[in-house]
Amino acid sequence: MRHALGQRFILDLRVRIYGYLQQLSLSFFERTSTGELMSRVTNDVNALEQFVTHGSALTVVALLRLVGAAIILFLLDARLALLVLIPVPILAVLLRRFNTRVRPVYRRVRGRLGDINARLQDSLSGIQVIQAFGQQDRELERFAGESENYYRARVEGIRYWATFFPAMGLLASMGTVIVLGVGATMVVNDSLSLGTLVAFLSYVISFYDPIHRLTEIDNVFQEAIAAGERVFELLDETSDITDAPDAVDLVASDGEVAFHEVHFRYGSGDKVLHDVSFAMAPGEVVALVGPSGAGKTSIANLLCRFYDPIQGKVSLDGCDLCKIKLDSLRNHVAVVLQDAFLFNSTIRENLLYGKPEATEDELVAAARAAHAHDFIAGLPDGYNTQIGERGVKLSGGQKQRVALARAILADPRILILDEATSSVDAEAEYLIQQALESVLEGRTALVIAHRLSTIRNADKIIALEDGHVIEVGDHHELMHRGGLYSQLYHRQLELATTRDADPAGQA
Image 1 (cartoon, one colour):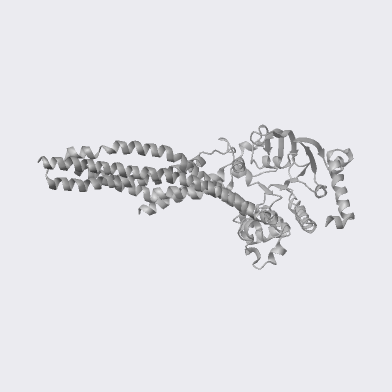
Image 2: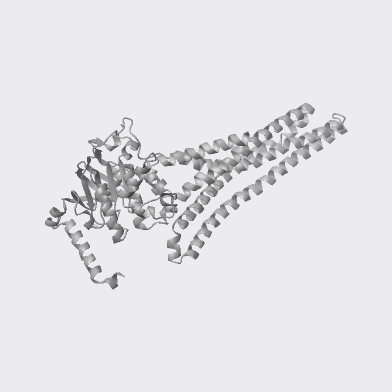
């Protein structure tokens, strides 16, 4: 029963931590490594488990034994019982000093273990790059260094314990020696019977033994405290993005979006958007173009409300995004990223992620709209094919079409395409563009374009540079002006022409 209750506590704590992590804003995950978070959810919670399921019960038993033995000792002879208590204050002082010194050590131990997890997660995620550059030995050296740091922190804790525990035993032995010496004198003087002394000495052992147990448990307790501090430090994190007290549900949306004099920065860094203002009419396709670092993705992040502007506001249907409940907002917005993320499960489960209740007909219709049904049907298990971690068993174009089908199935009123075709080949790009023509119809769409030829038919094109809106207009207007957009377009056209004219150089 005790173990079952302990496991229930740990289960509830672990689930609560995971649920809490799901609510934190992206800025938190940008400054905290995945491996570190995994260590807190697994290793630190496991350290708490050791004390909750084992240490707590042993503590109660040891305290009961200690109190029982003390009562019997005082009943046998109060004078000798007081002598037995002489080492106890010294033991308490030593225990306090031990705890003061060892707790920071165990805190470092937990931190070093988190570093190992972070290094491991980073290396395994980038194993293709590591092998491609032949850096296995270098990564092994790095991992060995993190493991060495953990080892040293662990050994430091062991040294404290190896010094403290024998000292506790020595003091307890001194107490027994004092009782024996004084007791023997009392027997000689006929102030104490030999039988009482023998019985008293046996209970002295029963008195000090629980103290030894408590010191052992205290070591486990200190590790649990260090782990608990890290766990509850995580639970003390607050999200930068929360629902306002008067936030409302967005039942339906026309898809009218507006940026009003928006300024934005990431954390305490420099501003990445300066006084950005533009509007998107319902059903309008708006493309964002500009050099790398111009602020295109930042605008998409603000529209999804992954972040809030530091000045100005973003509105949907005339309502400030900060006044709309997050779940409600994101039910009306879907994103297809350049690096399409797919979960390590089946194609079906990935497609249903945005709409778990979708029917089979809806699922297939979405795949057909994304030009993904044919290749899915050709796979060994069709829609039930396992695609591996991050969709590794699919090509880049296939992953993008699955991600697009997932967005289509969610049926968003607003669709954000963040350079969704920039990392695929020409054939895959053609298929995705074919899919987009039908998908974007009737939806408000924000398209972040890398290949400018793909957004010629956009209703509005916004050219950005250094976080400023430089130009706004359609393709023909901006080409006629000869400004930033025209320069970028001609530059890409020249590069494409050069590649076509020199296929050997392209290869």
